Image (cartoon, rainbow, N blue to C red; front, top):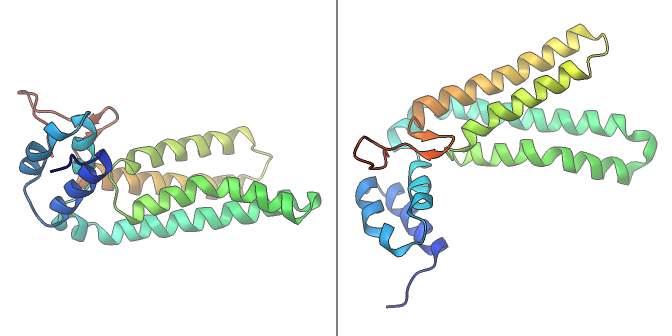
Length: 181
């Protein structure tokens, strides 16, 4: 039998976990076929259990909607800022500004675990940008800040409730060195 490539191994792991197979067994059966087992562990840990997916579906949908709203807001504000430069340059800058919120929204839609740690970081960067560019519009700054903090809070709730074993450095381990799924 021909050896599988890494992407095929990750795909099989995702399929097995989605089908309800035990995560530890999936990891143990595939870890020797891959160069970096830690990436396989992350792939497996990034998938929520069906129960947690169902339990937090509404919060996840709200987070997804807020990210789409943020992307649309970004699009409109960038188009307004660059309208004097012409339509094509304004659209180009707007598309660049859309990459992060849309990419985050796609990963939230997929319920992919690691994104829930990155979103609060992006939100914190957004809040610092609001503070740095504050021009006297207190109401606008407060609305933008609260909006970003709401996104960050929802993201952290989902992260800690659905993906408690994913940390900044990857998948957490137990005292014996086994990955916690």
